[in-house]
Amino acid sequence: MNTIYQNILLELPEGKHLTAERHTANFNLPPHWHTFFEIEIILSGKGRCYLNDDEYDIEKTKMFLLTPTDFHHYEIGGSVSILNVSFDETVCSEEDLSHLIFSDVKRAVTEDEEEYGRTVAAAELLRDEYERGGDCQKKLLSYLLHRIFRASGPLEKKTIESGDFPEIGQALMYMHTHFKENITLSSLSARFGYHPTYFSELFHRATGETFLDTLTGMRMTHAASLLESGFRVSDTCHLAGFGSISNFTELFKRRFGETPSAYRAARAGRTMKLSDFEDKKQK
Image (cartoon, rainbow, N blue to C red; front, top):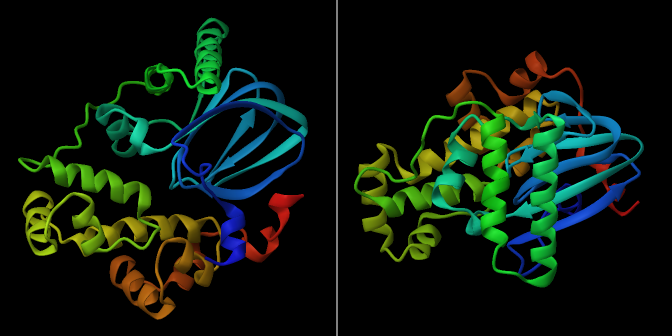
């Protein structure tokens, strides 16, 4: 992957599926994504969070929930103290993961002082469990997620099963969190223990779409969000998982009825260039 892309695409430490830490940020964080989910609980400080096309105040009692599809950066005044919980899909229950991906969970929520105190206490317990290698980490993570779900308002109950093919539901969940990577039918079917041809048939019977159409749709949705945020077509192509600009342009025009450049020109109010972010992570 291009070094610039690596600077803005953050991954969990090798071998880790969950981390829980308290840290202080005293500089503006440039735009970036994660390959994982993240809960940010603001303990103190002020600033602004730019999350996709929305803006939020950074302040005590605020929580942010970030997914692998969310593009964000922070502008910080002074310093901000944060409780950070980062995790991937392997440590989530099926119900929690289905809400994270398929339900309209708010990306920013604010609690009253009493509820916020409970959230912070749970996050601190999770941090202690993480540092000690305790066995309650998943339970505490689920508790934190349910607090965010509740603060988001009523959520429609979701399931990751696809009809009579629960393995396809699991495959869809994996695709939603890894679509920017080089996923193929062969690699995905092998992951779930099927022959590619049989897996392809199951996938179509369960979803009504081919594997490739589903994967392309996920990438296209993300690409449209990037273009609306002001990213150039060439950068969007690579960040959304497409290997060829010509193929990306053709597929985008077929789906949205206009070229990526025309779509961007009509909707983006700014220009985001990945070259502007090079080496900023090290500063």
